[in-house]
Amino acid sequence: MKDLFDIENNERTEAAELRAELEQANYEYYVLNSPRLSDRDFDFKLKRLQALEDRYPDLKTADSPTQKVGSDLSKKASGFEQVAHRYPMLSLANSYSREEIEDWVRHLPEEVEIVAELKYDGLSISLHYEHGRLARALTRGDGVRGDDVLRNILTIRSIPTYVQGLPDYYEIRGEVLLPWEAFERLNKEREEQEEPLFANPRNAASGTLKLLNASEVARRGLTCRLYHVLGEGLQGQTHAERLEQAKEWGFPVSEHMQVCQSVDEVMSFIERWDTERKNLPVATDGIVLKVNSIAVQQELGFTAKTPRWAIAYKFPAEK
Image (cartoon, rainbow, N blue to C red):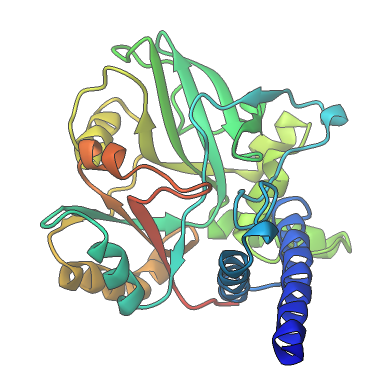
């Protein structure tokens, strides 16, 4: 019995240490824009913590890293208004192998279509249009509330400020990105001024979007890719149809997506873009897979922090 008691104590201690490490990693990633833990290591530790919480349910609390998304909310005195999301802004579960994708597909209805898209490596943004006009631009924040960075989003020329024909309320989400060319120029400037360099375009985009000087934001040259539509009374019964409609309205939607009928087609898409992405003007770090049918998405629903109808496949990390 003593051995079992020791094992439980050791595992509870391990869970506490994992929780502290993951909370610190989230802070470094979302707030400091200077992550030290790789995505793969983060996910491995998160799955281990999940397993321990399943074994000892009293360890699972609402503020555990397994139950909430990482937060990039600015301090209230930052100058950005914090606004509640109309729809929670969750994160995606990650996968790293065909086996993990196959396991995800096994939990879906049979013969469901899957949309494969590029996973852009930037800062998540949610654009709110009211009566056709861009009214708010919210970061993910803590998934419940986000910073309204509208004044900086208005510097991105590819994002329309008014669209005729939109529903009274229309929300479209995506990633704010700093193109490779602009990233290299910015780091060269920082090097000349003996300032710390940004580790990657994602960190640079995040730091740029939270600046209070909109003219400096405009000078750096952010861009955007949008990939998810929300609202009521929308036309189109599939994810692909709604993105096609968004593209016709002039939103910067990626052209690199494919409706797949099998895991083989998904893996072929992944293998092709693992190579071709190196020729893109912006950073990508994987592929996102989504159930195409909106009705099936609604049927599958969500966990505490991720949709069950979507998953990300992460490419091996690069420097």
